[in-house]
Length: 222
Image 1 (cartoon, rainbow, N blue to C red):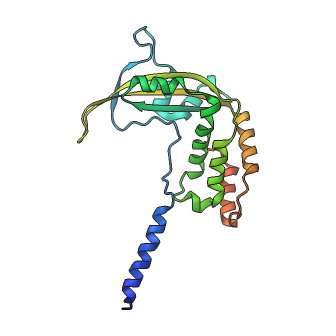
Image 2: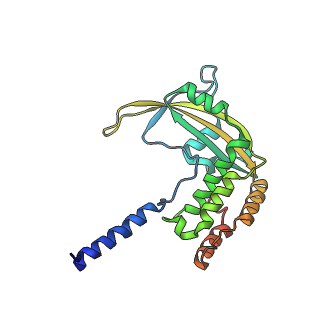
Image 3: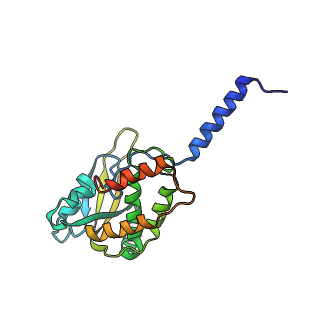
């Protein structure tokens, strides 16, 4: 039996919505590595507290205002700051994660994540906005052999989250690793990656223009 026009229309709309949902939807993301604070908390313990140590300035700045706050420190002039974080209930597992961190192996993913965030800012569908250029760029950044990244410091804190609406009181360990790289080193290596990205088939003129707008002002808000 033939479908009524109204039924056909509904099926078409449903198919269109389903196809749309398969695409990657991104809200304007925060900088990767930014402190994630699901609720109010107090820090009840931290690295070297028992020996009279204090929380380093870079950790306090990061908790308050993400990597941009750390980059504002004069000690990191001329360098980009990346913070690798992990949080959970097992101190030993997090300590093992920290001990196994190697800039030469882990920094490419950190760089790719921050590049992805820059291109995804204020764009709901980056795959549509930039075409295949977007995915190829992120993959290339993640696979690249970045050099010059330095493991500056690491730290941990124990957070006690205060109870809220439908949320019980809880505790969580948070480990953070501070990595920096000279801005000139990062910029030159990123430029080389940009040069190598060559999607096939090529993006449309509109997609090329959209990507170039980000590239031309890439480090504004990076």
